[in-house]
Length: 121
Length: 116
Image 1 (cartoon, helix red, strand yellow):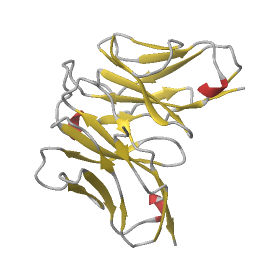
Image 2: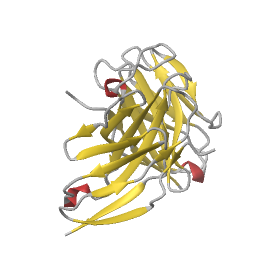
Image 3: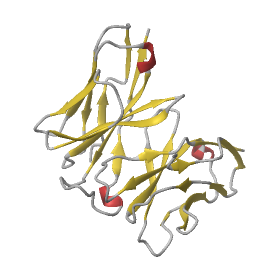
């Protein structure tokens, strides 16, 4: 079956611009999470969506936002880009349920996409 | 407090030898899951192995095994018979099942280089 698809793979933007990244999860997965990876901060959780609702949010400014569509595809948007937003943005999908807990076991783990490398100049 | 600690920034191993990558974690949640991921230079995070906090046996997946010592809060990854293709970054991650915080917490990673 098809994996998690992220587009575009590479992106170069100018400070002050905004950007939209896309993520298509594995068919049947309704949970989509986003992570930012930088050399300095490592991998940090941005937010998670389930059934078009944001279920959890990491410690990022309001410039970072996202949404999920009825087909579970998700987009994240970064407005007023800063140089520090340069990073690899990873999307992950999961079979996780809509409840507070996840469901125990690797079946409820995450499958990641190849990421979008964003460079802000 | 850091929840996932990987103390080895880089490791070298000879091809065909075994290597252990260390991971310690901190949580007060009795129910949690521990994951190991491999990240080659292409960027994709590849799932390797999972250990649940209530699992009685150490997890194994092919050449990967997880040395889970719950009392010591450690979850070390063991790669047997290393191959050149194993050269990559390796991340340990944890998900706390009961907090409702629906997210993975990652360690800082270990860069493994397999030498011929």
